[in-house]
Length: 185
Figure 1 (cartoon, rainbow, N blue to C red):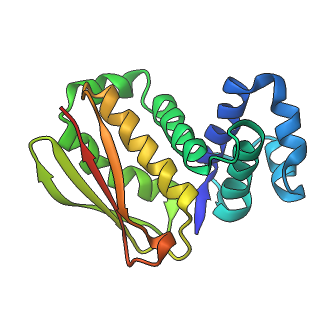
Figure 2: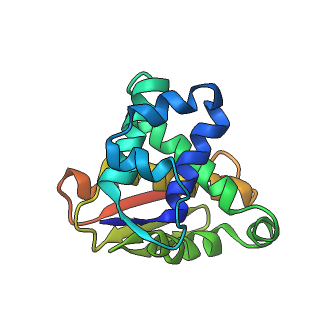
């Protein structure tokens, strides 16, 4: 599985924003390949192996700043990524759209950041949407939780209250798809 450079920029910016005094500590704890990439300009249009350049750096964040709480690390990173991606003119469109429209577009968004990846809405009700992620060769829970955090924050930006996102099945745990169930008031 590969991840777009722009998503890696969000990982770096998360550390710079929330752990700026320890940014070099994080950078120096990365594997040599990731350290080289994160220490230089990241091409936002290029594709990178997700395990080396996203999962491993998130594991270091988890280890250094979140007591090895991988779920929290990935979830917060996803929320940060959504907040950064959905600002300016995009924030206006998100706020003006329905939650169902936002989630239905999320599938297209994630397919632009992860490959191979296919996301589709499998159920849509008044205050509930189910997204199904398939066609992923080597998913990782870090990526799945990151996506869940992104969905949660995008729904909050759109005006939803009491948002919950639950992963009820996971490719990383051996299922054929990862299912994200989003509910809100």
